[in-house]
Length: 254
Image 1 (cartoon, one colour):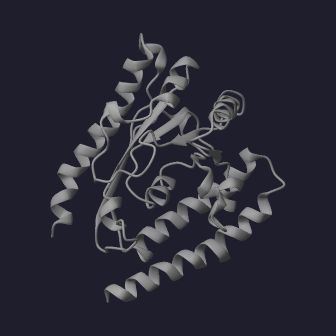
Image 2 (cartoon, rainbow, N blue to C red):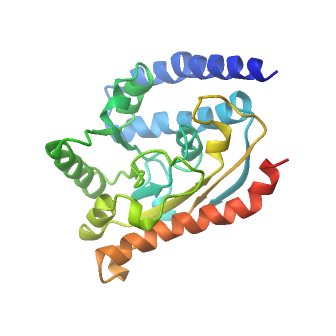
């Protein structure tokens, strides 16, 4: 049964990407990014729920969204920061919002997935290139302040090797400081359980419980320093994760 689940997950993922999402992404290329997101965003959300439920046999057992109305909709507004546990974070996050991510340039080179991420507005960055990081800030500023389209980032930089978010001292604070300096609200997002579903070996572990909390936006105008603002944002991510862990961890042990 375990092997059949792995085969089924691969088949459904490839089928969804190639025969559902890719044709729609190709059709929307001529349109502006805002229009593309309005069309493709709901498809990402439905596919995310479908893959989590039927490919991974995962239960979304905790969901909260505390954003103010002006931060909802598609495309959403603000900078969204979340802890990063596994590749399943992406389909889980699409259930709550469709904010194009800032992601490693190498991921955009992945056939099909990388192309669709680019069409959906993902901004590539090369970690070892100062000029690349500078361009990301320029694009992010234009995207959020002028086009009013949100962005999604993972301050941990890469997937956590444990199921716990990194401490504030360990994360990369650059984009949080950027948000503070540009007076851009940050929406912390807590993820729990995806690492238990999709581990390091790339195998699906079925019947696990996952959760997501989209916290209320945090306005940098309410803080005196960038560091205190960044810490407040990340503390909300950790707080939400711990809250879900207390609730869902016993369910995943059964």
